Image (tube, rainbow, N blue to C red; front, side):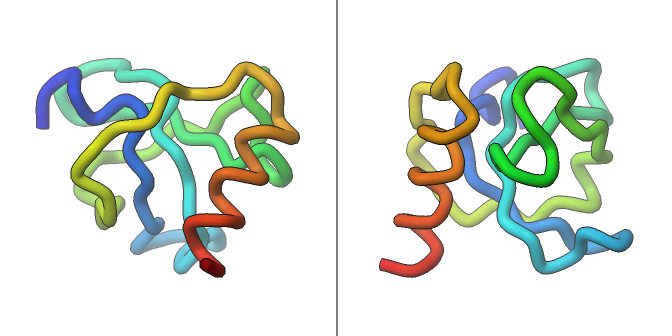
Length: 81
């Protein structure tokens, strides 16, 4: 994936946070991204994840909200709509 993965929703495939929905907030290099969900992993301290450990579920990126409450609300609306 290219830089366009920023703003996409993805489920974690591995680790203790597997099956949790995240939003990609930044790209570190070709293998790693930073993800946040607004509750467990805030936008101020996102989690570093390998791209191969993520399963992307959206095709269109969202503009990543700056507030954790807004990010959590967007993820919740997507997951439970």
